Every structure is written in C-alpha cells, then in structure tokens.
Length: 141
Image (cartoon, rainbow, N blue to C red):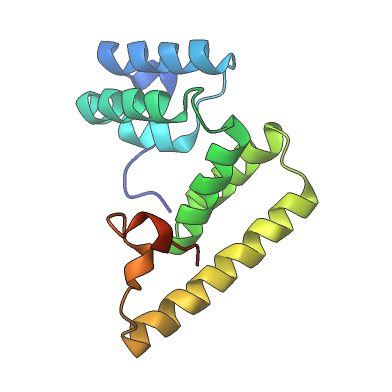
C-alpha cells in the first residue's frame, strides 16, 4: 500500500506534467506507472530520477534486454517487489524468454548463496582477481 497518494494526471503540477509528457514521448505509451505517480509529489525528484533512468537505460554497450534483466537481479537482491515486477515485464517486452528468466533466477539464487558463504567465511580476494594483478596472473572466478 502506498505511503502517498498516487497522483492522477489532473492533479499534477506543471513541472510534473512536463515530466509525464516526456515519459510518454520516450516510451511511446500513454501509460504512466505508479512509481512515477508517487514521485510526482516532488517534481524535482521526479525529474532527476526520470533523467537518470533515461540516461542509464538508453541504448549503450549493453543490450536493452540485458539492462532490464540486470535491473531485475538487483531488485531481487534488494527485495523490491515493485521493481521486480515492472522490470520483469519490461525485460519480457524486450524479448526475454521464459528460459532466460529461469536461468537468470538460478544465477541470482546461486550468487546470493555464494555471497553469503564467502562473507561468512571471510574469504580474502585472490590477488589474481585484482585489477592491478600482474598481466599473466589475472583469473576469472
């Protein structure tokens, strides 16, 4: 349940309306999700967050589907149900298959398990994994 009212379009300030207009334009959709409607109470944070999302999720070295899948993985790690759902839907819209989703979940689960084990055991980082390790000594995990 929201801790703030989710603002309808007719309740927006001019600044928040401008951000919503840009979201609609960039996403080529009239849909504005609840995250943006909650943030609309603070147009400055709404604009800053939208500009950052737009920049980070824009085309780049990583495929848009991979970016969404990474967003899902981080959202799982942080326990954000809303983001898990919204970015899973976005990844599926960008072509993520059921097999890719299941494999991603297996990786998330495995990483969570090994992260806890290595933390509990206090395992030091291997010198070969460090960025400044001598050229012939760098290894993959």
